[in-house]
Length: 384
Image (cartoon, rainbow, N blue to C red; front, top):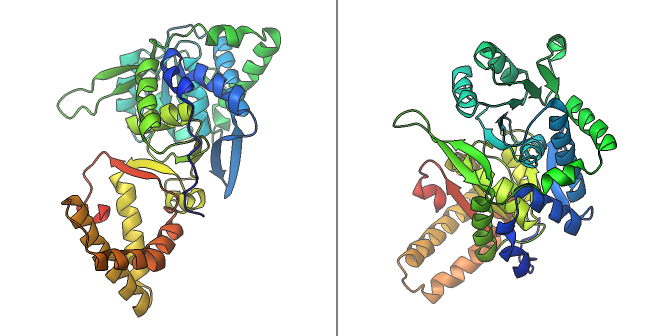
């Protein structure tokens, strides 16, 4: 992986200034037209191989989901519950529903059935997307309290054969087939529905953590997100084709803000690791340009680096420890806005060349233009 020092291919100012006039699905349609099949929009690692979707394919799957939902009877303005993990189907499902003027709410796949029931009832979800058999079973366990849910759509068919007789359930593949059939019958329907959306429409709802009581619903419009995306794209070192890796839950604001907002608005490539457990290895293969993730990820990465260093030879350990000492001193001086002595600058440059850059390349961070953390507090030692 090479360091990211080339010129940033930024979105033009005219496009940026007009972002707040469109919904997310409308922005996807514009990106598909402008970036087409020559640019990668999504990568997903499955069985050790990276699968890719270009911008036209991204729009196509979103369109088929939307049309499939219409075939099932979804009406504009209804609410959709999503219990999904970090996979492309999350994007297709969320944007497909929003294309029809519907409001989506993501729920944590780690939530227990009682928590899912609470969230789905709060929004009176008309349809629910579930990742796999585990999530389906949670919803089925409280089915009698979800009279407003008309269909449950599952993504992963593994282990679902015994559920075939339940008409309440439908697979994601079947949903796409319904979309294809409706597209043949009414080829202009999706475009009509898509452009009925307004930027001021509510795009999604999130639930607060509920630490001081019952979780509260937060409504966020397309305009809220696109305005935030515009600010980031104007000021942060982000360009078309840059890599973002999705490793925080879709129910958390970060992957909504970045995975749905900034990557879509900025023409970035969205990358999905195979599993959270392989995220660090997949992270190195992708070499993201910018990342915001939880403190847990950075702590795990720092821990793995320390373990590798402790198992290395004496010379490597000595160089690493000396590099850490030099780097820490420079960081302290910079944070205190004090001048850095010439000798220290030379040592820092030398350690960067022989220790820091090879190490950054090894763990997938050499391409960084920006790295951020959020959520729980992070140890200052990890940041250093």
